[in-house]
Image 1 (tube, helix red, strand yellow):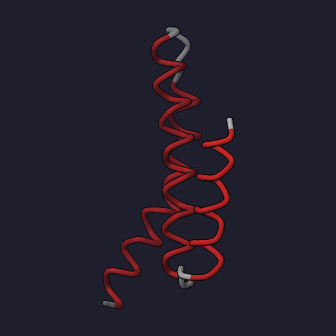
Image 2 (image 1 turned 90 degrees about the vertical axis):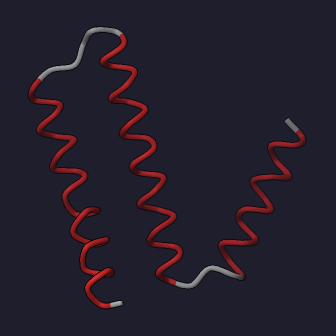
Length: 75
């Protein structure tokens, strides 16, 4: 547990002192994607995936996809 706490503190310092707004957005989007994909895999593994959930996840991913596409256009 002590190593986990140190890692969390190190990540937070990095986020606070080094990341710019684009990096922070990318980081937060990555965390959302990871959580959502984890939930999707778990539900699928347990045999509980349903069309409504797929539609819900698609809606959740759409703003992230649009955000990434818009950044690419600006670069």
